[in-house]
Length: 228
Image (tube, rainbow, N blue to C red; front, side, top):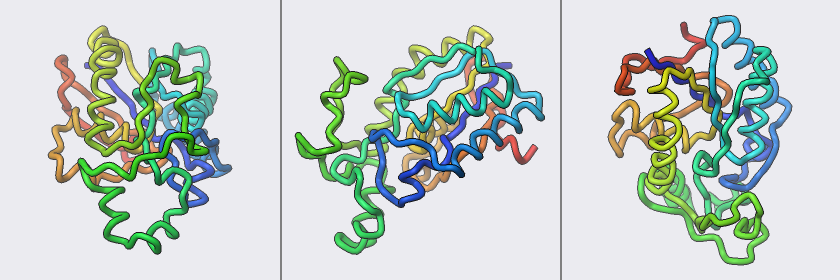
């Protein structure tokens, strides 16, 4: 029975500072590092093991994976990184303080930008200090100017189909360390959650989510490891 574990990265420096982050690369806060280590200890204690790991190109997800694997004595596991597992791109909101943005644009508008299914944020201007189009990580990639959750799902699922699903079907136990919205994309797909419900799904930082899947990668059971 294929097993998949999802972890949202631990608290980042910009989670702590209440700033829109998206594709911008920031590290983990002290709390975030502790959350990552605790996730690894929990998986070790519960006997959850892995054969292959996937993560994004963003430091906060990579470090979360490394810290968790270190606690499990599994740093030697193969890891595949891909930009398609990056967080949703917050466009022109990137770097802004969330409370100041609410005060400027109103709670309703910010809620729409953050929680609607298919409304993207304002586009990032070319040449912005947060413009990643020249970052060598994304050579050959058309870096988005902003993404809705729908856009993020459409970006994540081809990588699921091409790399992750075949590994699970081949019998690999898979661990994915990624982000709130890229993981929402996977949860929506695996659990058949409707468009109008997925935006309300909260995925806490540093809490392993376990999927027990059938042979066609349909959900048999989904649960937080801390609750078992």
